[in-house]
Length: 192
Image 1 (cartoon, rainbow, N blue to C red):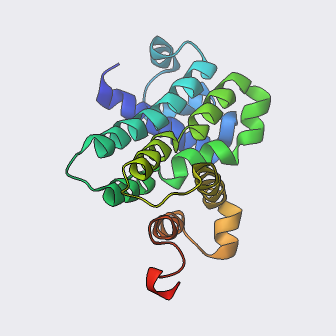
Image 2 (cartoon, rainbow, N blue to C red):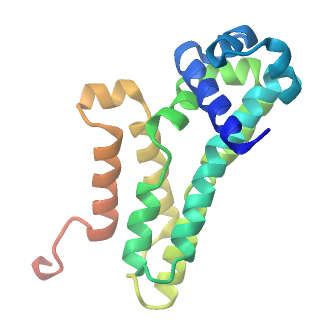
């Protein structure tokens, strides 16, 4: 399947998942794409395969752009950290998976396990960068296990639509605030 067709199919799948969760049908997708179910089955073997490949699609885009950030030597450690944190896929993509986690676990356990592995590894390269920055003396010494916990839990809460609505905070503003706290802390050095 050509890459531009890939993208269109996966974006439609994500829209369907956002509206119907795992209860969308192949017929729904064919209708959205203006094609036939038969055509879809030339690309996918079944609905499990559709969901599996859509999960790969979500995280492949993020991994490519993360690599571009981390490999760019013109960025400082601070810039790399800030860009990496802000590069987390928007709330819609990962949020769809988390919003329908129960359905995924019940009906698509293998795909859910894959999504969890991806989500659990979102911060891996950032933690490596921070550890390298600490070792090189560019960053303050800190407990990266606690940093990862903070990042993980903040991400989960910001992807919880009920939480963000109740707190009147957007995913984007929450990620920006988290990034600022990680980069600049709570107290001015001069105030300590």
